[in-house]
Amino acid sequence: MSKVRPTDGHFVSARIVDLGFHEVAGLSDPTYARIKAVNDYMLKDRNLAELRKQGAWNKMRRLGDAVIIDMGYPLRNSSDVPVGYMEGVYVISPTFFSRAYKSAIFTALTVAGIVLLTTIILYPSINSLLSRVSGLSTNLLHANMDILSVLGSAVAKRDSDTDIHNYRVTIYAVRLAEELGLSENEIRSLIKGALLHDVGKIGIRDSILLKPSRLTPEELKEMNEHVRHGMDIVSGSVWLSDATQVVGNHHEKFDGSGYLEKRSNGDIPKVARIFAIADVFDALSSKRPYKDAMGYEETMRNLIGSKGSHFDPDILDVFIKIAPVLYETYANRDDDKPRDDLKQINDRYFGPGVVGDISLAR
Image 1: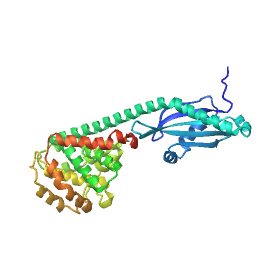
Image 2: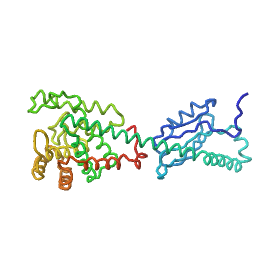
Image 3: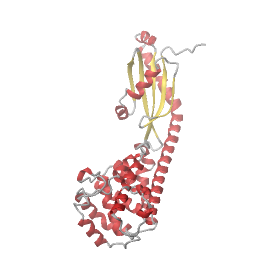
Image 4: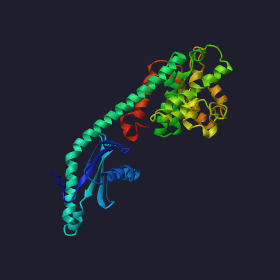
């Protein structure tokens, strides 16, 4: 027995999508002759930025010789933060128009009632599903950040027998970025890059990486390749691709004398110029196997002495204002405070309240 369709029309597609309009769950009517055209329209022919700006939409348009209604509604989590959309395509039957002139008001109320009833019936289930999806996204994001911290710490321990440098330098870089007014997305990129800035040292031989004496020119050239190794590692991940700004440029210098690309001035990403100051500040003010920690005055003399050569002068001027508090709070500190404070920073920029604003695929 053939399937009988409603005379006024029927839904041929219904989906739940995230904020990037990636499908989370969906149903479509494979028996509808133009279902491919409907799917192509939803995936390719709509202005997603405009729909996202509208929040809710209800648009009628012609698709070939068919008339469809494209409708969508925002879905929010328990904190009233948008987490996705419920959307569908309703195909109006050709016979509807022949009766529409005689019963326009009645038909409009009927369609509105159907949509409203469907929304009322399905919304609790859909909202519950979206809440679970949002929770899974949050858990995945936290897992990604844990992996970043573990990987960065493993590399740091191999290099200097301690992972605390990664925590301190990331805190310094974030504090400076906040003082400079960087956007939250820029700071997220900075955090990823700071945690993984030396990940390329995985590819450096122990005989060079752990050599206690000065490196030969040939050995130094090989050591410098850790930047290229790091770029290869992070660029292989879509989510980590923005970390390349720091990983690939943290040894560039403002005057163009750094490596690998010898970039200068504004050609160096701002997050890398910020990180370079934080990295050297921590290196100078920390005890290492081959040196003692410098005091605050000596540390700052070295930084200021490289103003305009190694460091961006404008960014360094801002850092000078916050350096005393950073030195007093974190310099050469190897207890739980840097770890705890960085965890709070990660929660602020990658926590549940911001999951709806960022994509895990970044």
